[in-house]
Image 1 (cartoon, rainbow, N blue to C red):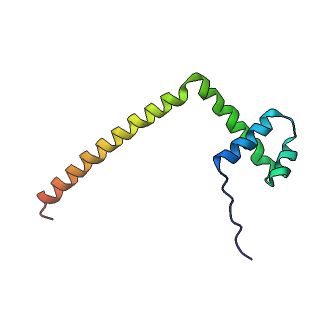
Image 2: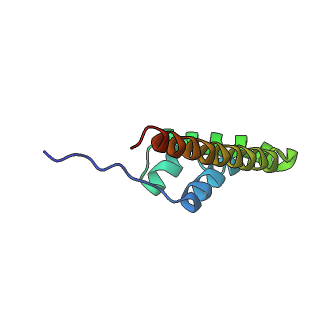
Image 3: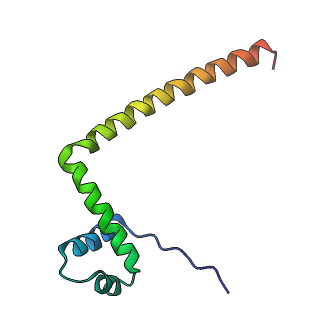
Length: 95
């Protein structure tokens, strides 16, 4: 018996399925059967879509991105500092 390959779905597909679930014109089971996926996935994608919508209207997404970018700059600076220290210590110990 071979291993089961885990499917990876594109963001557009997930969004389309989640939107169908949010509209409520069909049940979760009907949507899942239509797209040949498990009903739990439909429910999970719907939940993620609804939770993500609040960030669009409150502007938290932009703040999160700005905070992430600031954190990234901080980490790059730390990497540079540690590289300089490592090089200095390597020369000091004659390596």
